[in-house]
Length: 492
Image 1 (tube, rainbow, N blue to C red):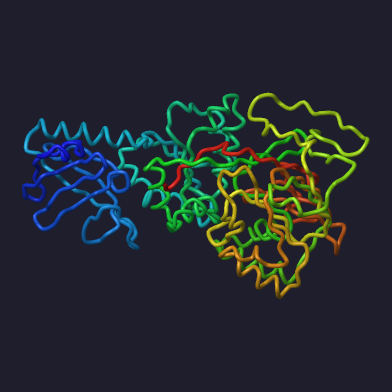
Image 2: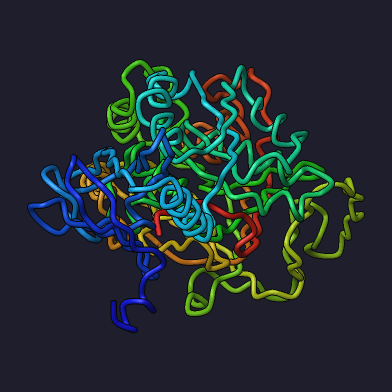
């Protein structure tokens, strides 16, 4: 064994595999290598090894590989990863113990989670989350030797309640087997804790099992992976993390924290009113979108925003007055509002001096106003192709006028993000935003719906299920964004 080999190896020992004697080597680069008598084999521990166990005199290694007839270094094929077990038999008890120690130490050095709290929403989407957990999530967690507590959500805001009270020291992460709604509940629960500063650092994972799955799609598509439960739970197991911006939606004394989007107008109407066709699954969106386009509504109102650098030319400059914010933080004109004394526990909002920013204004009517934090709003809707996870800005998509046939064509471009290139779309990045929603232009007795992350924030007069209580009133609200406040498990 030469000096170079010694430097690059962590351990190299004779073992048996399928009755064949071979040298099994773990390198400093994280390669597990051997020869099975026919060809050289190689596993990348970080990507392909889930975990291992010792059974009697055997070292049992659980993996996911991307080839159906063998193992290659750094998969990279077009075949979905397949679970595969390799059984090695070291030639002595001492060798087995040494392998267990060295391989365990290497896997521990990767920073993978060891204990997880997993929320499963049995009511979301096609009500398939429980099956997805049992078929796709549980087997891989077991292979990775991850200890987990599975909690089915019993009602709306159940996950928020648990996240708000749970002992965070018991877990290395929280995983949501659901659509986007449970993730949003968890973020809100963590940020409303007294210890929110440490709580919000808890890594969060999302496994697509709902109707929209916009966050899972955004994370997986970013690295070219399909939006499946398998790839999503692999991202959690591997333990890579990225920061995520969090938006604070404020109205009076009420706060709501958003990680995906806020919508008013056409997009919100489709998202919420299509619930009457929930039995159709995700197809309900396309079906109801056609109805809404051919019976198009426009809404009166105003939007105010602080443009990101490079977007200062959008909208009209506000001169001679400040903007009246929805929480009494800044005012417009001579009537100074009394500053509201907010509850002191929990995260308040980002430290932005809203009074002294370069506010711009756009007056309605509007067909749609859409504020986005990540690229995908659902698995088939790339709402904001330029959105970043942690750039400190929200992407604003505005449509003021568009006739029905061009709008129909434009909607078909939303699966690839090309809709933002339309002359009917205004697409920009903003640091802060105020929505002042109004009534429908064709019928002033009817108002609209404000939707955040797939849930209704406010229902105006004459809207779908307007008799139901909502978190906010249908009125002025303010949105600010905190850069990189939350943490997500990410594929790479």
